[in-house]
Length: 357
Image 1 (spheres, rainbow, N blue to C red):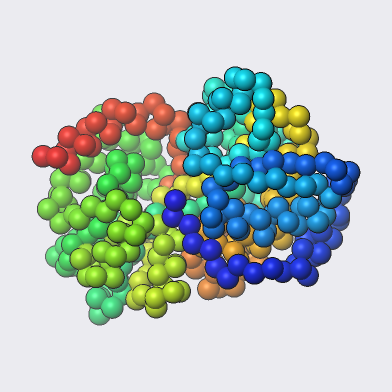
Image 2: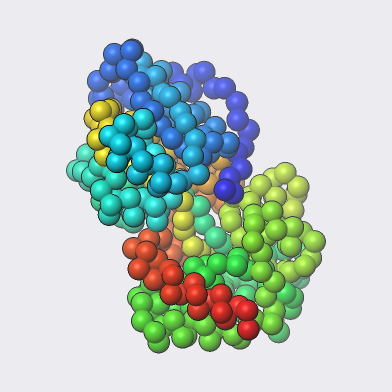
């Protein structure tokens, strides 16, 4: 994963503030003996969850939070559902796995009527899921290289005459095709419509052809930043959290062009089908979506929560690196897991063949 936490530290006063906010929210406090098991990614993601959500929820309700870790595997969830032995109540898979698991009947449906759907973009709510963490792939460049106008679009990324230098791209069919269409002038909210037929797919591959000789592929979060810092390439598609980390910890002269169009991704909360703690799990999700707690989460990690009101509590400096910043919404390409469930295999085969030529 590509997460980076910022300044994790105990905040006792904040826990009491969160508890008070939760009480005002109107939730009944369960008995102290009750528990809720939540599985997340470990490391900095679980650290941020623990500080922003788990500890305040336990403080507010008396419910013990038992946390576990996984790598997003649906297989571990399927095994529980098939055996009837449900050991996790809430899981945090990525968008595609959340959609697939819902399709397979592994998760409980979520009722939109009980969630603050007016406080976040519609794509964050699935039939069985709601976004827990939002990340983005952003056009990133070395600001020290360009004395004149800075690159501001994926068309600029393709313009190797106006903006000389190699380009770093994630070796991913998903990123490559979407970015190619953005570079070819397709609006962020239309890229999947264009990519849905062969003509649009051909258009994306033709656009990649025009840049192929200038591309240096990166395959990890470490590689993407090293390539920028070493001067191997002057621009790259990069994960916003990795870029923010490099800027904060290494004073890297990097900048992100959010206005170019960015590719949203991330994780989602789901409740396992058959959980004996279904109502308590839903209560926790509602708590986690409160703006105060969403803002706290975004102080702990260089990725976003989804509450628009939560973003209002952030400083301009934090907002500038947050993919959930409401100012960036219209330029974002939302995840489309259903499209990739249907098309990933065929398009990836074509991409691998194209890249090898």
